[in-house]
Image (cartoon, rainbow, N blue to C red; front, side, top):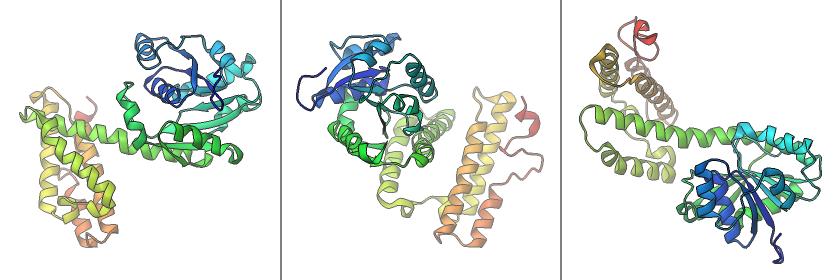
Length: 320
């Protein structure tokens, strides 16, 4: 336990990219990290680099030693872990237990709450590398925080101590909150990878360099101006260009499916058509497209061949 007034003895369960970094941030704030669990070679290395000198312990021993237990485990593993520790009587009254899952609020900690713990949900809205550079990124990060009203100041204070900004999320809204973040962060990676694949496929040697400035500027504009930053052929109602894009992507996908290329791009075709359609609908809602323009854009996204499947490829190729 920490002997400094107002400081806590913190146990970190899960030395993944998130747990090791947040444990290091709490230690930098003056809390004492009394133990960390790590199994894989990568997690042991992270524990050594970010939590130097902290003993690697079994999970029950960490819980026994800690005033604040930080559960930084995968979403699907969290309920069973909390319940399993409850069955063994590991939790003790007055203990703070915080998890880092975006999907869950405090309800998932009900078995620990029944033992008298104070449940907190602290989810960092940030992607992690598991390296020290993540600590420098925390001041630009927001945390989705959920706790009982009386305990909310504790959750908020912990986030502030780590250098980040707490944003209160209602228990009932946690899944939607997490879906919004996943939609933005995960799908941005997918879209970037798909675009890079297309460019590499036509011989561009450094697609990441070509895309880098474009994507950074687009993201900055979108965050600063919202949908007012929307541009491109769909938002302009440039039906001919949209139709040409759609046709070229389908033909490229069919060529690869026929064995003329090493990679499958059916996911790219489907993603382009879905995102172009969504962009057109949002542009129309903002008055950037007339109803007639919207209909023409939507028609341009449809395959000319009635035998083509919903993802832009013929059913025989779809089932290969």
